[in-house]
Image (cartoon, rainbow, N blue to C red; front, top):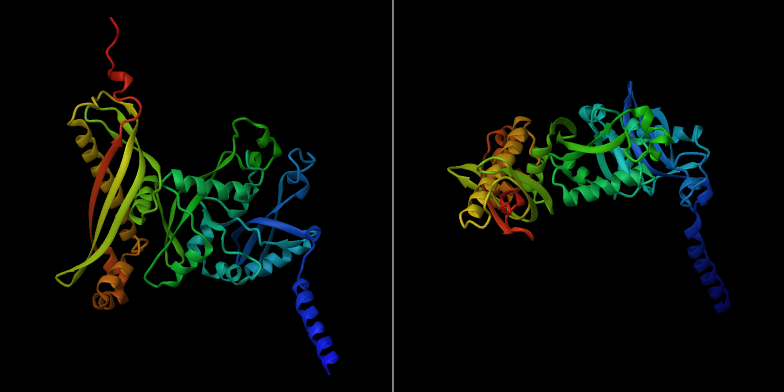
Length: 399
């Protein structure tokens, strides 16, 4: 009996160990997909995949016979059905575990994205750490066809550019699948996505010749933030409004800005730190939002006649910058109110402070939000003037 028990235990252990390989895939049988695009094709969905050509990226030189990536498209009633249809044109199984970017066309985004995101969120082979962006004024398929210099794989270029830009330039924001779906699931919370556009000639951008130019005539550029109401794109935030959104959300890590000097000309600043508090209050039975922003910045470039050593100059510049920041944030809130889309989570702030008040306004929140009073207080401090005190513009000339 003991011997029989040992044999059974051994067989069970072997079964557990060996079962881990039941769904393995050979690398030579897979088409590594790093970018996916969703478009409308009549009543169907068009799915485009950006597949890595392994022979071209395995070494620095590559074979020279093909581009670093190849795109394939197929249409279907659902996105997963279209993805399966791609097996009729690709010699390998589509493998999306390394997905970096998901591009949704503006046309599809305006119709609603819930249906097309359902399938990809259910797929167990797809991780959720990729970014979602909107093709501004073009299709997702066209965006995925553009070749990019420096980063040979365009999806990686889009992924890294968005991460770098978010850290150094305020008008962009990176949104992953989980975060976007979480916002869509909240009936009183709306979301945003960064837009991307094609600059230059599309046909030129699909050719390998674009990679041989020191100044590419076709390139991809992030531009503006798409404002969603529920799951539909309803409007675009321009660069200043996009900055305002990120200031309100506390997303600004570092960026550049400028103001007009008192006597004309401009002076630029590098924002080095942001602290923000968004708090709700109930005044006479009506909810209000108070936003307090503290910015610290350094002088980065002076292109005007100004004496930075004058003790009155820095406080004056701080006040001008604070006024401009308030205007930017106000314009962003105004755009959101016009579309009745709470992209800031003000409803959540009200619920945290006064659940009773929130229950009263929750059912008609989009109209309540459009009339919501928002008080903004901006406080800016200039910390450093740089290695040079005054600009060379105001330096006295030698006699």
